[in-house]
Length: 449
Image: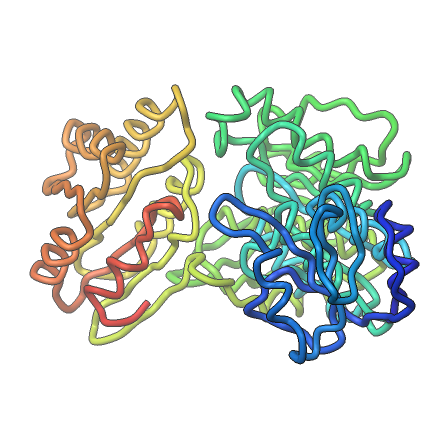
């Protein structure tokens, strides 16, 4: 949607003398958009102001810059360009009276967001964020893609420190909030699971009183949440009092089928992804769909079309070897779920390649040990660990009875060992935090990710 420089300047608390207009916004000078205004953000390793002069003649029509910056390029001058980006995104979002779903939680955010997208897209033309555009820069960038053709939006909201959720929710103003679960991801910076809960519940600060908040009632912390000012909608597997719950489940090698009871209606649901954790994701999508008036049968059809995003539980079968690539991120809960999936796959040997789980702080040693014991209980035949923290996985796995455990601190040695060991009939799980760059190991072993 077109916006004038003066309208944008007023929205962000800046000033401009330019009478022109722009039709899009971008903050990466390598991704220039014709008709767009460039937001000159400053990071630890770059300063967007250094690239403003190079925008002339590229199709960009102006820039949002710090008020101390001198340029003859059409500009809006502000105190803080990061804050200006957030304010502009919030203003722009307010121009659309559409359902907006905000998805947060310790685990399963991206998959849940994707399943909601597939479910509600059977009725609504829906915007979603892609990749890791889920933080205080990525979420605004996604909102700038809204236009009059969209009828709904579902966006993932990621936080790692206190205060981020308040920023995100005040930009997004969700009409429906979702909290997938409260686990231990980012516990190093958020202090405790109670601290994580407090941060995630900040999503309500951007929601109107009475708005629906969809939560996992099986989660030990979420089940005790009291939010009288909001319409709490629940989903679960164990707790059959949930508004949307699984009645029965059947797992296959690369899919899961279950019967759902959704607000009193029952139906069979097919999820094209393995693992009971994906049942939770599908239940959430069904709950949100119901709130948006999507017929149960239609939302189920949408879920059946789900395709994993990025490197999240991507199953590749080639040359008689099966790879489960699930290394976008990791936490004790996510790693345990992935090991359960590995156990359910058909193959001669179950091999787990597990790397460090980062940002666990004082909980790290115990969490890595817990995963090691869980690997043993899930009958892993061969375990490779990668990184310093993952040594804790290896030690516990040995004590738990995994017959063959090998540990590595560099990707080259690990890759060579895996390549030498694997054979036809093997099933391999790759799981680690994003910072471990496990995809480089996969590429060295198989020549592709």
